[in-house]
Image 1: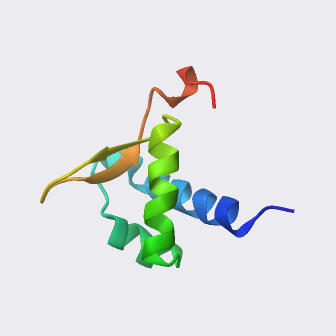
Image 2: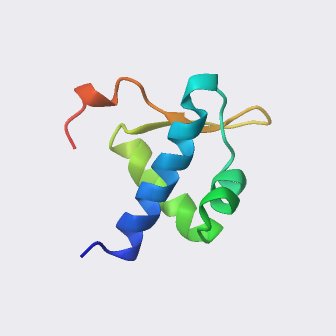
Length: 76
């Protein structure tokens, strides 16, 4: 059985994977809406995913989050 946090993390990764071919950055708000995840909870999850090297994050008006394509090289 997966925890709610793990299920939400998987949903977020799947949302980011759908955008991966375009290379576009996704805002936390867009991920939250697309994946039906409470935004504040998602923000904490995104920090953990970034810290483990699974996603990249960038601040600013054109920032957001996207999959880290080098993630296969980072131990979790």
